Amino acid sequence: MLIKVLGSAAGGGFPQINCNCANCLDVRLGKPGLAPRSQSSLAVARDGAAWALLNASPDLRQQVAGAPELAPLPGGHTSVRTSPIKAVVLTNGDVDHIAGLLSLREGFAFTIYATARVLDTLAANSIFNVLDRGLVRSVALVPGRPIALAAGGMDLGLTLEAFPVPGKVALYLEDPAAGPGFGTREGDTIGVKVAEPATGAALFYIPGCAAVDRELTDRLRGASLVLFDGTLYSDEEMIAQGLSTKTGRRMGHISMSGREGSLAAFAGLGVKRRVFVHMNNSNPVLRDGSRQRREVEEAGWEVAFDGMEFRL
Ligand code: MLT
Ligand code: MN
Ligand code: ZN
View 1 (cartoon, rainbow, N blue to C red):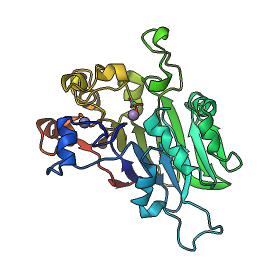
View 2 (cartoon, protein in one colour):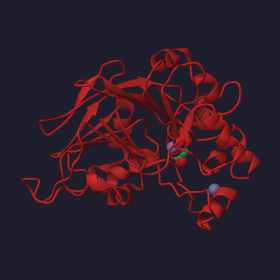
View 3 (tube, protein in one colour):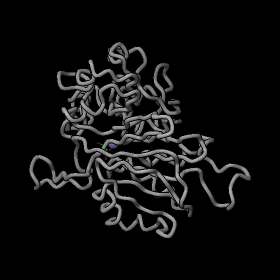
View 4 (cartoon, protein in one colour):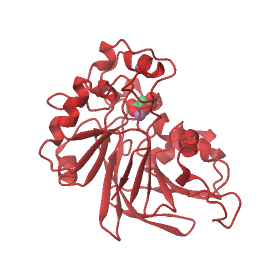
């Protein structure tokens, strides 16, 4: 199985259009030790011929332009308008994960996999009617029921299993009157396991997660590859840097540090390769050699970068 990180930053990207935090300022100036990152997405394939995108970011067009394997093969297809992108899996309804669907409107067949909750959100936003429903099929993911990824009768040779994780409803759907969960419902945030039945290879992808609970711990124990929510290093970093009034918890994102953070939660889980994705531009681990970067690396984590590849 081939896995490519198309975008390793959280919503807003790195640098973010309107941000002059220390990280954004320095990456914009081209200072050493900081690499620009586009917004949150992966691509996976069994053999490199037919790809599934895991989330479709607003930077999708630029990401595909930088990934030759996602371009149409010269002479390799029966029709002129075509793409090796055959499926798009959505882990929530956030803008950084769905807006790229609008860049896939040019007329080719693929399948969207998401929970009923997220598919309902797409259906309720008429701009997504731009996707030709004669070509673009939607499949509702049911947690605990793995399915084969397929498009237009073509089996991608990969299975997909969705599982709910602690999280939050998409920002633009928050209902302040609905109490502490802001109207969060089942299916708002999922993690996915993508497996290759032919070899038994499998990866977990969980770019948004508010907490690592017992169920998730049991699921991930001994996994060979987990790509996990690396939005923030500390819960209050956006407040401390004057960027926002929200904590990580309020945004539905666990932090790396702290007693309830991801470093502590994964310690002793025996996950062979653990990789942070979906880093917010405020996160000090984005700076090579920072104290926080050294700390996560010493704890056995990698910090994803755009173009990072894995072969399982
Ligand atoms: C998040 O990950 O918290 C969201 O992408 C926020 C947003 O929609 O901007
Ligand atoms: Mn996000
Ligand atoms: Zn910034």
